[in-house]
Image 1 (cartoon, rainbow, N blue to C red):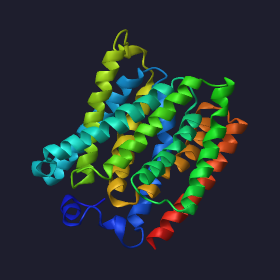
Image 2 (image 1 turned 90 degrees about the horizontal axis):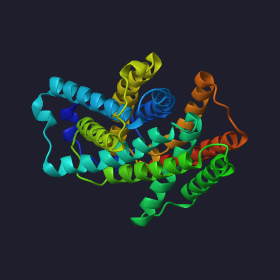
Image 3 (image 1 turned 30 degrees about the vertical axis):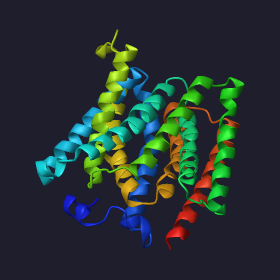
Length: 315
């Protein structure tokens, strides 16, 4: 990650328009691929004994406050200043990504396996490509092929919900969450965000955390809350989500949104499921049905098409 001074000295859009994709971008992608793949397992363990949105609020408020404190300590209070428009933009993105996108995912994981949840989130790049097309970008035949492959995988992954094997409501909830995440990611690349993506990430998490808290209170999640009934493994999973999933993973994602082509960034949704399915099987003993296995193979093929297309367009 670059320092605040370096980040402000370069035009935010420069890496999107010229040159090959840097090694730093690929390193950040690997972090998002692997770390976020593991967060589905973490969320599943957290909601075993914690209220869904209250746990999300705790996660993002803690992570946002920690990141803001680190940035203020390293670079001074001046580095944290943002304009009213920039703060409004981070609020919009924070709500779309963390309150609606992640919030609905956490709720859904109370009723469906973590691996299937991750596989369903593979719809995100499909919505991103559609949004880009609406705004005038021609995706090209190779990227369209990747979208079609992803749609095919998504259709296969919907079979367990349609057949009643898992909660259809949970499947549909994650569909809505993936659309919101795609819109938030798309908006982040076009709204007037803070120059330093780490500052943007901190404010997004704080605003998203407060949003999750308000929705949790509206849902009455605080009623009957017994901290003594929360298991040790749920606490440990929450700590992991705060320190690794949010501080490391979400910060890398926020940085990528301003430094890499959005189509390339969105490919994390194809790779995360592979990690999530494996960890769900290894740690929780979640079964892998034929539709999940077939859908996973299809989306992995799709990410190869999308990534190779992005690389050719940047060469």
